Every structure is written in structure tokens, then in C-alpha cells.
Image (cartoon, rainbow, N blue to C red; front, side, top):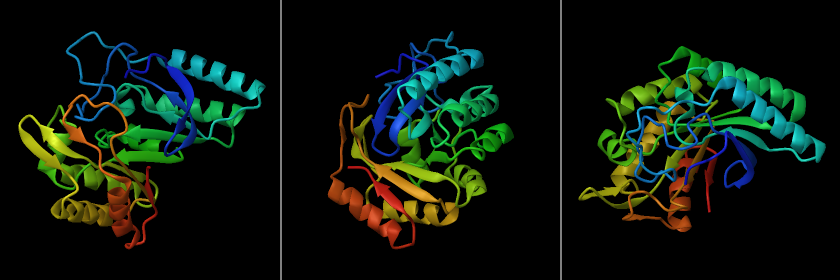
Length: 254
């Protein structure tokens, strides 16, 4: 399921309420440095001509949409960067965040600005600076174990859980940690980030990261790897309860 507009929605988000989406990535294909086995946008393609959406076009489409909603006395709860891949890869991400802050303040001052990110670009100082300006930096960590994270997220580069956690610590008490829990078979290997060992590694990572909030969820739509299994809300909530006992606010999506 690809997003075929630069600005889309608003849609009702399980986590963010009335969410107006911004897609910085190509409209016709996914562009990401992960290739997650559960991604609703499908697999990465080998098209070498993929281009990011232009900053001026993004700003124009966002202003037109916010003006339209404002005229109808409708306002988003969140202006959310997501779309067809990893938004922080955009070379003008910092400037686009500034544009969005300006437009939010003008047309929808009560809306939060949220970015859904896989946290892989946090070695870039401009990306970090941009994320520190917004309301909700929602950063992904699908496992506290390197091997499992690689199986689930299929990074297109040399990946290190330790480095990701180290970079997330910059956002202590300011970021929202996001985790997808699932199990199944992929490429002949069993994948399950809900085992006792996995949950303990995840809890250990949380203690290092110290997020402001945690969002956990499971599969909700068709996945590119077709042998994955959704876990029950009862099981999801039991995982959430373990983190709550450590003092964290945890939202488990039904």
C-alpha cells in the first residue's frame, strides 16, 4: 500500500488521533534504508531513478491542505511525517521541518508535529536538530537483539543495535519509542520478538534509552512476508505491563 500523495488524509491513527500525513518519499515506489518484512508499503524496488519530493512542492501542498481544513473549521491532532519509506533520509529534512513548524503555527497551532522514523539517520546532526524541534519524535526499535532486528528490519547497511541505542539516548525523556511485535517464518527462519529472552533484551534497551513514552503494536495490514502472525491484544498488553512496572507510559494499540 503506497501513499500516492505528498500530503494525505487526514486519517484516524491508532496512536496519533486525526493525523494529516506528509510523504517526503517518491509516490510511485518505496525509498527506505530498511526493508522490513512487515512494511505496509511492500518491498524496496531496484529503481535507481527514485527521487525525493521537492521541498517547495511539499510546502505548497501542506499549506493548501491546512488552509482547506481551516476554512472548514477542521484541525488535525497531528501533522505526521511517514509515507513510502524513511522521511529523515530527505536531504532537506531540517528545512522541511522548519517549513512545517511555520505552517502549523499559522493554521493549526494546537496540532502536534510527529515523525515516524527508523532512527537510522541519528548520526546526522541536522536530523537530530530537526527532531529535537518537534513534538513527537517516534523512533523505531523492534528488538533489543541485533540478529533479530536485522531479520525483522532487513537494513540495507551495516546495522548495530548498540549504535542505535546510543543515538537514541540523545533524546532522553523526549522521544517516543515504537516497537512492532510479531512472530512467524521468513526465509526459512523462525522470527519471534515476544520470547522471554527478547522481551528482557527490549526492557534492557528501554532502561538505557529512557523514552518519554512507548508505543507497541502488532500487524494490522497485509505484509510483504506472508507467513507473519499477529499477536493478541492480551499478549501485547502483558508486554506493555512489564514496561509500565518500570515507570513508563505505554500505549498498546488494539
